[in-house]
Length: 357
Ligand code: AMP
Image (cartoon, rainbow, N blue to C red; front, side, top):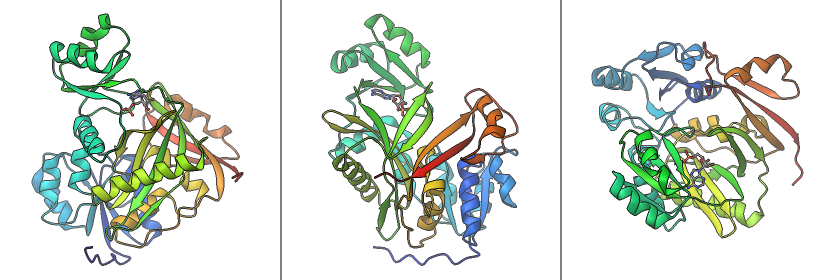
């Protein structure tokens, strides 16, 4: 194992991406006496409101990225679509954690599925698709219904189309505008869960209890703890997260989304970062996922992941944020975004109740 010296308080964490996740990471770093320096092309990025160190740079501006990297002690990121060229510009000057391999695997749904099935983990059946001919062949393999997903840059249900009957196939392909894609067979799941786990550069590992996720219009709506799964499934989900993080020699927090089916757990996708379905940890754990991530990338010992309460985290999407004055008996977290737009994550709230099991 590499000998990583913990960064002392006063060190600076560079954060690529200044959205709500970057903002919550910066807040957690501040509590540990660490500075954070946010880098994002958007001058109005909400994370800038909580730290005085910030860089406005396009992802293609290698010299600005190098200046940023030289001014920090470690670089992490709040989104998985960080271009490889950004890491090329940064890595000569500062370590990047979780790291290049985790990005490469999670940026491309085909690479991700190949990686997961290479570890012997169950995924939805999948076939790469480039054109109508390969789509027809893919449908013959997966059967219908199936879901056509762009290989890159899909999020919150964007970049994917459900194909229910063969007549809908060509429309699905044109909806994705010719982008390289994969066809996934439809998984008949009982429920969706996710595991938020952390691994240190020295290989130590800690995971929070799996949460149960409900999506609305392709966007996470609620995460509920505990998930309605038995203890064997919960342990299995955590073991899967451990396999994945070990294989990636990972450092940081990861979100692993899984389908619970009658024949076992199926991995849907991985996010090499703090994750929306881990926001409940702010209210129901001593050390939340944001502090845990900062600890991991700074080479500090991981904190405990015990859950002291049951919890329901609800996202406030678009206009739902206007309900904030009526949110009582819940921990409210608003992201400071200037403009409310439909489908935009504006905040979240977490209700806790005494732990039942
Ligand atoms: P994703 O962007 O891949 O996380 O997909 C968003 C949501 O679509 C998931 O949380 C599921 O609810 C649903 N979904 C995605 N892939 C599949 C699949 N292969 N089978 C069934 N449902 C899926």
